[in-house]
Image 1 (cartoon, helix red, strand yellow):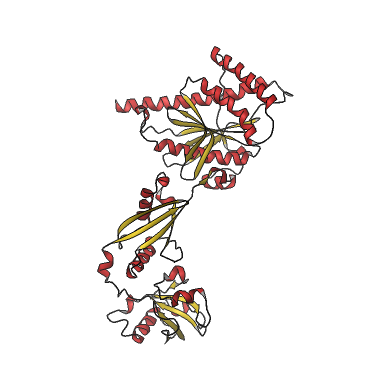
Image 2: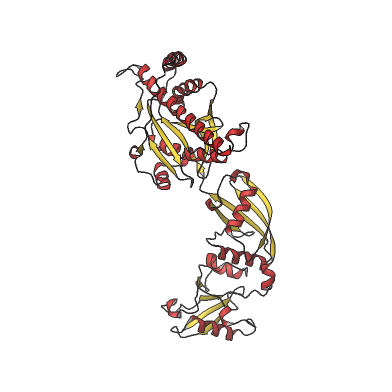
Length: 453
């Protein structure tokens, strides 16, 4: 069998050569035949050091892979030429079940590193890195030992220089590398990445562009099915496990006074505000949150359109509830799509708990390094209210529970029950959740004080 071969970097039209070999022989025999056919090229190179790649590139008509070869640029054979590396102890017929076509290049031999010695490649090299993520750009110098370079090393460097990504984990980043006027390449393992860097050094291509991709996207872009797959949740949020969500009785004089104010406010809004958009629904949700926070004498703070980001999500929360500098609740108002509302809320809760864990030193030294593993979410169209509990373990794995598969209802038309009854019920749930969050934080603080003496 005749095999058309080319040494990497040679001209694909002038420098190809044929090697005749029995396809029942081992690949090691093919290596020997290639070395014998090119004694000057492979001076002091042993058969075992030759690296052969099977390719299938047409030589008699223009094509993209032929253009790569004609440029004589040191190509990454596996990624750019669809190469398959030949293993020495396998038979040739395992790679060539049929005789290769005429005018087709079948074997590329990696050129031994004659431009620089092996020892010089293993010392530290300095790369100029231009990293991009969305609209963000940054440049830095990366000093690396080529023999020890790893994808995690460069990922950690990227995280250091892009403040936007500092809350991300290295293993959640995907990096694409390119040289000037070259295609982007992604590497799955350190070995391939090291080979790429060596090729860059040997061709004096020490300036690299790095495009960063992450699992993170806007909360509104997450869909319920995708969230269920990611967090291993049931395909219907009504099948989530249940948690017991109590209703505060709201019996003290301050609560009764604020309740009367809430009833009056809601009825005025009902007469004045019209429409079915989310923005309209939000006007009827906000008063509940204002009254709820008022009952905590300033300890609970309400933030509308508050930005949060984490490993998977980013963006503004419709409403966010803080207690002692810790996010204890998020609120998502929807027009009618509760599946989407649950998807967004699940992401928002997960990212909020990440933020809680990573929060920086603030004016309240007592909560520094305090890990609160639970937060609550509210999804509502102002008529039907769902309350969700999210608990994360030390491995950052979340568990979601729902208070009721049917939700808690407010009858704005008052055809079934008075508005006051549903209003008291919903506000009672919200107050109960905030009190539970307060008890959890106080419990964690007491535990911390006991441990620190």
